[in-house]
Length: 299
Image 1 (cartoon, rainbow, N blue to C red):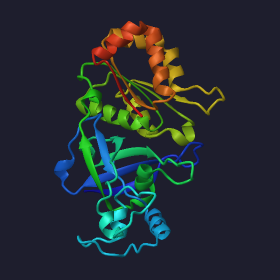
Image 2: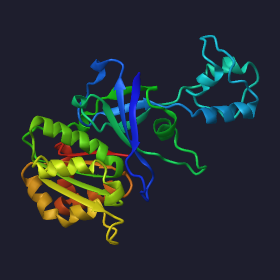
Image 3: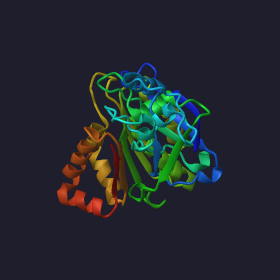
């Protein structure tokens, strides 16, 4: 298991949903092994209040002990909660319920940081309750408590060679997957980096902004373009910033650059794709994909 070492909200006062920066550490330091672009799979648990509500609906006692020594409530926190009960022994039946599925998150740090960092938004459903995955990580899981986590290799989003120019494009919490790319590049001494990042407001939503600005000032991130849609009344997004610099993008691509996109599957990613198609044509865009020079981690 991994322990939650630290959690803090990055965007108090934002017009968007709360975004949290989490740091998790493994019980075995040997587990601090991954590459930029890899994915953390975390198995959530239901909040105690949700389990208590479900138990109350069916008149069950969550303190009942199971054969393995756990309580019924502890078991129910880890499984899919069905809308109805079958006839028979509810305790025996609870042991047969399917386990909750792991959720995937982009890793925002490198092993050299000594922890695994995540950046995620706390999502709320139509009923006002938080989503299961984000509710577990942003609310229910407490500092010094443990969670089940494993790392999935994601070769299609691993960084290119150090001599290759890199164009990183993302919005919102998509900066998580791009930050690990930049960390890997900086650790390797590769500085031909260009980041285009979009969010709502610079004051509240410039995630890791101090770090990005410092890398830019130090020449580690020579080209940094930020776009904040609620600032200045122009409603510009990162794809608009990319379109405005199409000639510059073409020059980077002609020089062999790899483009990596991380963030919203709706809106940002297809609009960035449209800019690339407009610049290179459909065949040119498809060739970029086939050559592994256009990589996406979108959700």
